[in-house]
Amino acid sequence: MIKTVGLAKDVIVKFSLRGVSNLEQSLNLLSHMKKHGTVTSFRLARDPLTLQRTGMAVVSYLHADDCRSALNKPHQTVSGLPAPYDIIDVSLFIKKTR
Image (cartoon, rainbow, N blue to C red; front, side):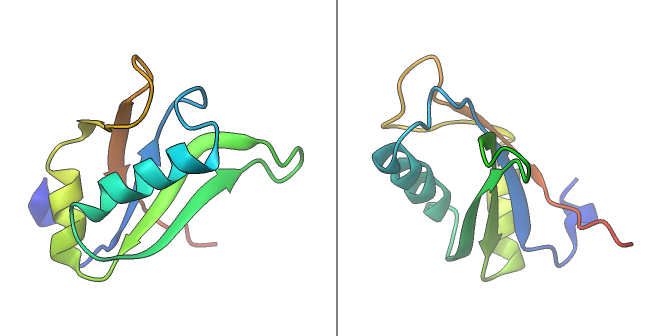
């Protein structure tokens, strides 16, 4: 799996909206993702029509090795989030070309 990542630096994080419902919990999620390396961008996704959160975030890392570190464990537990909503899924972010 790591060989297919190449020079990718972005990951998608899927989480429960009940687990990340306020600023403090969002910062806990960001802090958890920083354990893998230097985060250059952290964006919580919103539905473009309703502006409601979607339960996904896009995390960009400074180095591809940091991205690979985050992808090594696709299911992770985030301290500071309420159980059972403290489990996140991490996958590679692939930009769609038009």
